[in-house]
Image 1 (cartoon, rainbow, N blue to C red):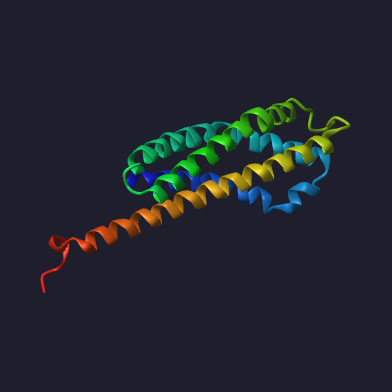
Image 2: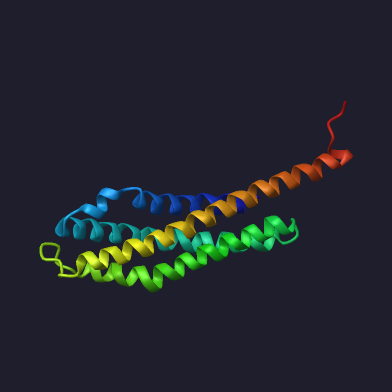
Length: 166
């Protein structure tokens, strides 16, 4: 299904981006001013790109769920799971991470507030949860694609009209 493939590509792009941040432990050891500058730059870039990517992905996954309904319970269930995990990721981002991002954007990088390290730790903890949900959503949509493809091949293989002429 082309729509699910497009959703997987966008979800993979997002999941890869958040995984990269988790895999960069040096970011957590930056001193206050350097970290605040990094955080502010990242917020600017992600703030422009992520809403478009994630909302498009939600629309594609929703369409995939509707189209998968009659393609078998497993492909449908995995598509729904992917959509729900992505929705939870977005809710976590909007309600928890984005307020911390906005707070960091307001800081003077040369003089971060006294509790900047505590706020950074809270962001990292929430980001790790978001990353796990994004990776699980990505895995679910990939497995749904594989299950759907395998089911399609089984159906076509069982159809004598689709068998190659011998």
